[in-house]
Length: 211
Image (tube, rainbow, N blue to C red):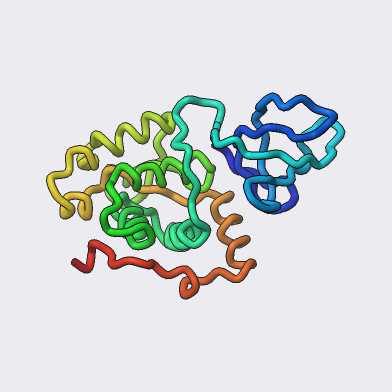
């Protein structure tokens, strides 16, 4: 799932149905714009003649592949993750501590992995790991599906979340480090321009780190 700027903020590809007398109601992959109300979105620059159209979300997300996680992320969680990513490469535990802080301490690692996939598919982060000398960072030259398999099953010296015997192993694992992209930096700047700050995007639940 790729995010791109179309002139009015950031947009995410999804499958929708055109509700227009001039067009059939056949589902088509488009990019969504600002929500108008309910599940209707106004889309700009999609038709050949660039005429804005109102489309109705039919509940099916698509990134052109079968591997998408099909989820949405609250803006406050998105902001906090981007805020922290802008400071350092984020390990699996960095994602887990914030996701469980926003979604509840019973959030399983699989859901955390879905969030990581969402960020990668949205183009906000690049997945990789610390270099062998543990001084730098190296991007993974592989598909997102393969990257997520590594995160789940383990890679190099890092323990995957499916193999972790306890939460301590998840806190220590270096199975992945995510790096913010230029698009991620622009998205962070957009959210900050809209008034979001560290203090306005606070976790709702106690982090497992504090237990």
